[in-house]
Length: 554
Image 1 (cartoon, rainbow, N blue to C red):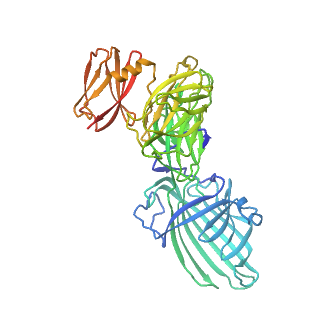
Image 2: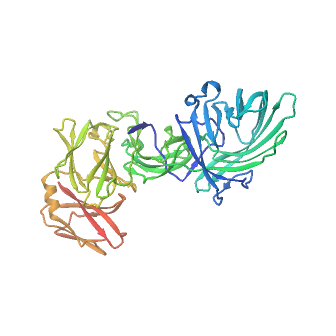
Image 3: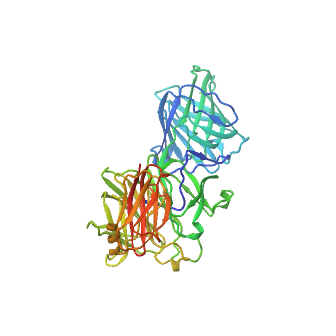
């Protein structure tokens, strides 16, 4: 499944928000927030920062939010925008640009507020205090009770301070606002002594969430009702998605970019044909993402900004494609972010290599991908720019693939895909069509190729282009030994093909060494003593041919 967004995604173990509370933009449909509950108040200062990493909790629960339109009670609560389900009770809330409102409940009482009670106005800044009250609200006790009951509901809300919050699960939220709210409920019959209930809440709000990330509260009653004191603290359990981001915008103006989450620099100097590793990213909340030129001084220099909401427990592959410049590129495909929400970090079968194919070349037509080395035939039929082909679950082997036009009759380019030689059993990869078929029409930008993103991230591993029979001759003539190697490895060439260079990559795609082979005779001894233990890909280039070999360093 593909969704199109127009920006770059994030990956961090913390999230930053503004110090001014504003209306959250909630996604459509059901939102579920998992929370951990402690059956008492927590100790804290009115001033941030706050570290609750040592707090232990007693139980788990969940809070759900749905749009009012999805509720059977929608007609009774015309001022509500959402419904909250918490602890077996139903609360009718309003999220409007001017404020966060309360509109009644279905709990041990049923109430409908004809006039919304504003709990928190928007925007709400540090040091602001707000008061509101709604009076003579009729209500009834569920299961029966005295007639003609009325409620007065008054609230005083103060924004105390802001700072970072470290949650019990270790996640850090920055620029969180601590709000103190005191609600007073005066309930009773007209002319009789009332029951007065006081609810004190300390709420840590992070922008974008429909509930506070922490609520610690105490409630007690006086007058014509039992005191019935209660207290608890709820911590939002961090919701995350797994995300890999691939920079595939071949525009020279976007060759290197800075990526921001809200106002925080997340990925400095993110290079073209580079992938992030799969990492955890905040989910279930709208976040504002921006891209700016490299070495930017702040998000105000951003050239693109967009809002993104990730779903909890999903795995995403995100590819940034397209052109940011106003001229110099033909066709001028708009910069965009393509997101695949069924990503994988491992192959479904440990004996296979799963490959997700993405067409990200702005001037390439609709193409087919045809395997010709082992006779697997057409792997991808008619994939167009920005599209993903679902994962190909391939037996781990060394393949030769043709990129052909959509008729299947014209070969654009051929490549080696040495999955077995690179020991990629059980891996899940992303193969991206990258660069320009005609650089002369695109500011002499990078040429067309297929780059492979590994789950661990790093520079894309560019598949070596297959130029013809000389590649097969070179593949048979080249040997690397011993394997595994400890101090040195010998590269031998039994053919008459003159070699130019050898590039050694680790499995993260990092170029470890580049060796000039132009004066090589039959053999060249390569010092690998400084290499870390592991598997390496050696890309050996001849004058008109190339080959990839695997090297193991012990």
